[in-house]
Amino acid sequence: MSESGNMMQWRIREAVPADVPNILAIERQAFSIPWNEESILGWIRGENRCYYLAEEAEFGVLLGYLGVFFVAGEGEIASVAVGAPFRKYGVGKSLFRHLKGICRRDRVGSLFLEVREKNVPALALYESEGFERVGFRRGYYPDTGEGAVLMKTFIHP
Image (cartoon, rainbow, N blue to C red; front, side, top):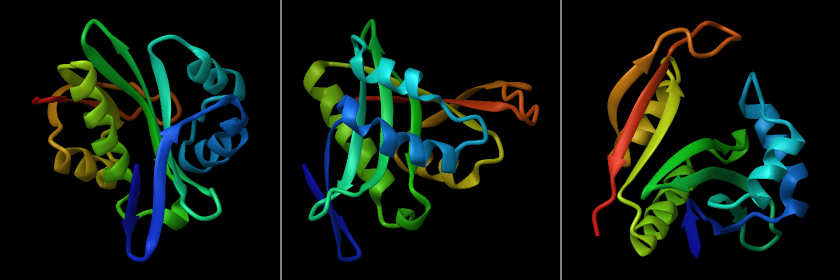
């Protein structure tokens, strides 16, 4: 899949083990409690789990990623990040739209995610992609004690 935003073009593909160092670089930049190399590699190799990558079309620079696992007709988005220089170009929206296409194809009925309650840009992105707030986990993040907003969207055929 090829996408573009403000003169930048990218493609979306599934991650392979060789992508772990680049995923890890964005993970460490984006999160105060990043996943480690073994966890990311386990997701890439695991059953019913996938990382989708948005990479710059010409040189293959990793722009962002989305990690998801599927169970019982539902998807749980475990990790989403876009590298700081590539935010506001539509990369995150493209990753979500790609995932929704996969869900329609595979008849996945809904997607869930958790997001820090103070992560206003992420909340805005998720809501723009049809996610609704369905719950709250108080004190979910151990580094700050911040709560997690639980969000869900239904995938329509």
